[in-house]
Image (cartoon, rainbow, N blue to C red; front, side):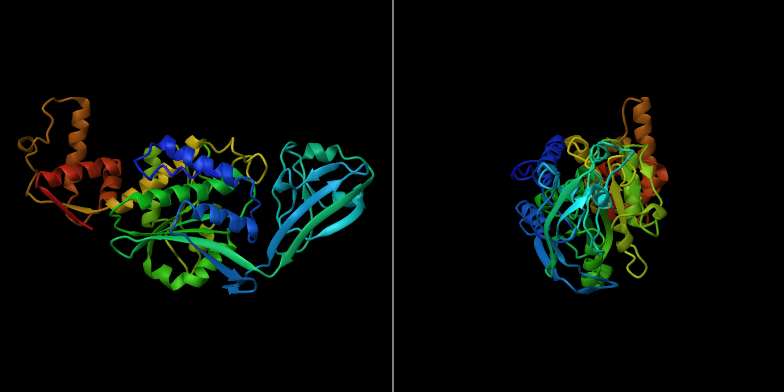
Length: 440
């Protein structure tokens, strides 16, 4: 296991951050995660080594959480299928996607016709092992590539699954990084899928890197609450246990999922679609890649469903690279560490970091002189007129024209179609020159 936290001693490059995330994904990839059980605990223990203040919580089986109930824990020790010659044609040890999630124990000899009823494959992706679960109905099954399935011969097969479903706990973790104020930014990702790199591991490793970065800062204004949960049942559980606090304190937040490939950037809005989180994500992604993809609330599918549901109504938007369900490798063995790259993870981290930086810097500027300020005598007007300098002056003057103390900087950036960070840099210069102030 690697412990090379790049934020410990210096300001790392995006490449170093991407490599840090990818190394964590490599370590975590083999673990058999599910809604509950030892794989979740092993994953959270690994992440806690990198985020010392992480707290891991346990919620017992049978606990009512809103309209749901915490399920039993799932333990798997061994699972395989042998042919008549004793050859293991499918083995859970070779790839944990081979076993249907939450499969019950079985030890039987079956004919191929019966075995086929318990096999799952993808005819249109003949080399891929699909990811299939049966969390709330007890059954057993194996996932297999279509190519291997077509090679099965008539005969008897020994099916063996050594697994338990028993009372235990659902585990989740949270990290709280205090700020000057107790208004909170909420960041969520999930830790419940087995060996899939983009759909599963990209979110928690980027969230871990964001936690490490926030811990390296000395004066963040807002408090940050970062949670690592099983998808759906975990977000329902977290909201059930913490809803009053969340509704009182959370004013912005992001769900991180499928954030590690290099193909695209994507955004899925909160249910209202016009929260500060929505506005920031759209602004950041547009300035990273104008071709980023926007999806509608009707195309939701991750934990934004719970955080934005009626009565909860939190301002949570999803930040993604290629959206879940869109890329062909989704929920298959092809979603691997070749698809998720250091560069892809670095890009995902950068989008989240920029979103947080806007939250931290979104002040309301106010110009302190009447009429247009005389910029030349303050060294703020270029002495050489070029196309670039002319654009800079227009951007500065447009920003000043809205700097009445009532517009926040993000609103001004939206109105004049300029990058937020460029405007913040101008504000700093005008403040230093004594002709601008700001407040939150």
